[in-house]
Length: 494
Image (cartoon, rainbow, N blue to C red; front, side, top):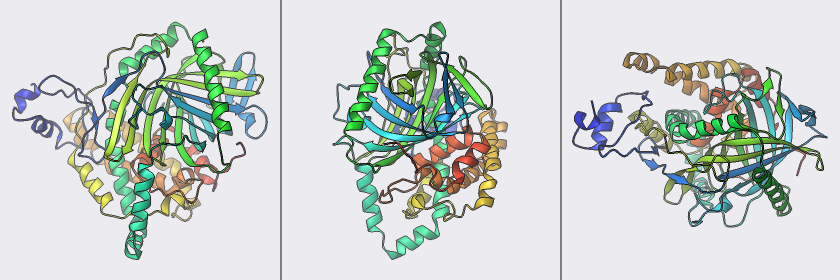
């Protein structure tokens, strides 16, 4: 029966009748009465932040270059030989990274200002075999847990989040500070609930099935790197050198949480290593969260090319992303956009949008967010060690099992399609949130900013990052990644 027949009074009536009483939503298309498909996210469970599609002609929408030294600390993870690179998993590596965005015709908004995408920094990674695949692709069985430390950010970038967080912290008196410390766990649970329940929207609105299919078809037809792509890779190298020269401090300006994933159709490997052909295109994804000076969350999809820079003696990984979901804080609340361009970054046809319409979130999400707002943020939480946050070695030893249980519960909910199955799966939400909250308590070793003066509170985007960690990484890797104090914040490159 059509929605118009079910409820003729209004769109919101239709949504409430169809979805308001359900904790788990079908991922089917929900259309307005007038036939238009709604694309939005509800980061507070209520407010609809539109996610319009923005087509970018003639270029990738985001580009990233990472250069891993093949000598020195951590270089043992990579072995370049006979036109291939073998990557040994679960070995910490360091690299240099530079990012950029397309030259927008309208740089007046934070979403389209290319300065917001341009930075330079150093990073630390753990490459892993991820048999369950990534959140955005089951085929992406090569994963990377990563953390960046930005050493250069252009002048003029937005500082909305930084300003808001500093004002909120300064407004806390002794009573608010005491309440924040006392109820940190309660607030964190409410944050995790909000983020987990809203994650279904970020997944459906952040990936276009038509676009992913076009990427795979292009790579399957030919994964060769043509002259145009070689030129983009050379330009990315030049930008990295330029941005590196512009850095004015050896102290990080911010820390960035991220993950990378590669589809393994054209990759040889097992649980211990992967061998990838150099100078060939593979389908790749990346998600990232920057907390300061302005918080955002991105989901990128496109191609990656592994290349041996003989002169610099580095393994270069170039990403040309042809789609990107961007969610960013502005002075007027959150804004979002889904950017999409040609899969080859040049002249390939841009396929029609096939993202399903967003399904309204149940009212329980707004209750959770109200709980977050009712408790002052603990501004010491993100700067503490896991031991200070009550994650001792015994608790950490249980995290691999916690992560596995959380991942299996999410998988069970994912396959709940009938009303009876949804009803039976609903209690699993509490289990997932509890598991995620344990991950977060121990995960401060990963989330903690290098700069002790960075004013940042644990929020929805950090929870989304830790949800990715829980769902995508093997338990032993998670234990390795969270065990050592300052593992993610100690680095040698500049």
